[in-house]
Every structure is written in structure tokens, then in C-alpha cells.
Image 1 (cartoon, rainbow, N blue to C red):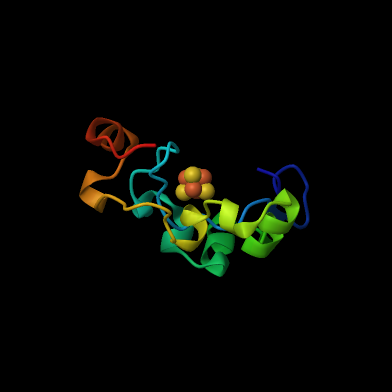
Image 2: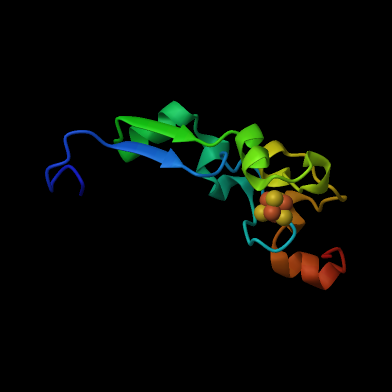
Length: 104
Ligand code: SF4
């Protein structure tokens, strides 16, 4: 659409690191398959959206922007290190967590 309206170049910047993993704490991403960054490389995503370039914020950049100690942050959807035990993919999803008593 941008190219049709005259854009000669499209450079996309995402103000988050790529989201690679499901969240089990309230953001309802029930499986990794729903997350484009878990299935495709940054270059593959760039090509799929037909942008000239694509860049994401780094995890360290996010932490720096937040100004909080890394150990105080959940970054599980970004780095896969969950602060609690997680359900299996088959059990994943906010509703499953809420009804299992695992949700915080
Ligand atoms: S940082 Fe943690 S709580 Fe926040 S969306 Fe990602 S996995 Fe969920």
C-alpha cells in the first residue's frame, strides 16, 4: 500500500525484540506457531512484508530503555526463560492457565 502511494523505500523498525515464545501470564498467544518471529528469520519476515529493511529493538536495548534491573523483568516471550513452570503447548493459552490455577 505504501509503495502504491509513492513510497520509494520502506524501512520498518519494531520497538520490541522479536517475540519468539508464548506468554503464559496474560497475553493470549497460545502457541509459538502464531508468532511470525518464531517461524521466520528477520530476513524472511522482511521479505514477506516486502520492506527494504527491517530492524528490531535488541533485548539489551529494551532493558536499557526500561531502566530496570534485568532480574526484575520477565523476558520469557523474548528469550524463552520463563520465571515459572510452564504448561505444555497443548495446555497453553490463557483460559487453560486460568482454569489450572497456574496463572499468577
Ligand atoms: S514479558 Fe513475560 S509477561 Fe510480558 S508478554 Fe512476555 S512472557 Fe508475557
